[in-house]
Length: 78
Image (cartoon, rainbow, N blue to C red):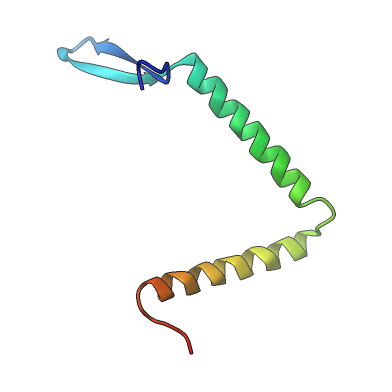
């Protein structure tokens, strides 16, 4: 990851054997860009959807996820 400019290592002052791993400026910029894209996509997807509709939708998704987890554990339905 260091060679690909995602992270950089810095010495820690208290111990020469230790290194601190930090994101590079490139990585921080990529993260910010991804966050902007996700926010824009969410805005587009929810355009025209009321707050109550969105809440119902998210509640249903949560229930479906719970059902999937039960299915993966072997508790099959029907």
